[in-house]
Image (cartoon, rainbow, N blue to C red; front, top):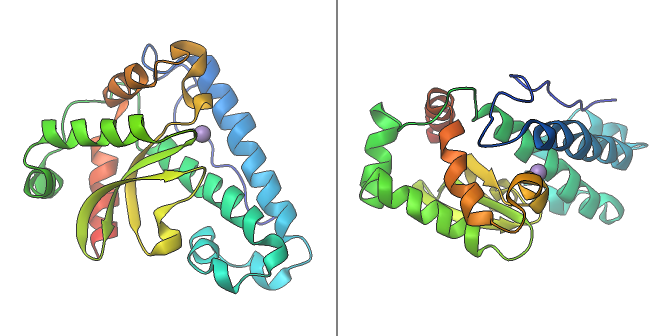
Length: 203
Ligand code: MN
């Protein structure tokens, strides 16, 4: 099978107390696992598509057979989004970015505090399931949210940082308190990794 779930780069309990171990286990093994299983299932019998990257599949959705387009959009998006999400967190994360990333954030949003407030707001206001993103669109650094597992790549955006606001990401610990989860989440961020992603997305 072409796609596999990347191993979590830390223990399930590494993000405690901000994200609990049980949530991480179910989220990574079961939810991300299901996206990968269903993406592979959708591509069965489509040998020409199995060699493509998930980014190629998602940026070319309209060229895919209609019978698998929605499955690839949802499950390919789920695979790409979660693969990014695990990497931008770490044990002992948090603080603020430095270097060029900090300069770019301050330039686009005024300050780190304003950036943070805007991303939390985007995640809080996303109705139902989805994500809030920091991305390049048309060469500009912007914040957006998306529904379901849609990744901004499907319409030309380059997301390099984002937060999962599906209830499965926080419900065990935070129940309906999504804003509380979104505030706590900043204590997990691996800014060195985000800076690397930023440099790559900027190219
Ligand atoms: Mn998720």
